[in-house]
Length: 99
Image: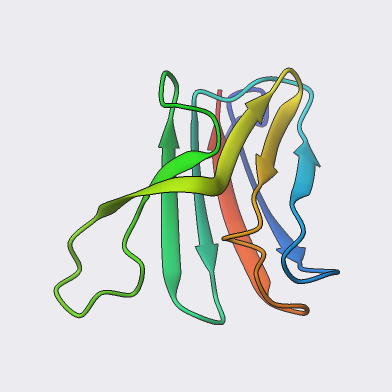
């Protein structure tokens, strides 16, 4: 992957229930995050309302729903993983951001 266009990374949640900001050096148009501990994934596409995402919420039927708040927000130089994603201290969150 060309780092100018796509970046992958991992955050270990420092304080559960607190948002964490990821700095990339660019504003992504797509972010996908996976909380490895609770097996929930979140997707944000450019143009969605800040703080929202599509998430599978670990549903048995694997259907997506809209997470209305506390999810992913784009910043000028990256994105913020909201409190819904970073809900438990020491959870591991893997992510992919595409420019």
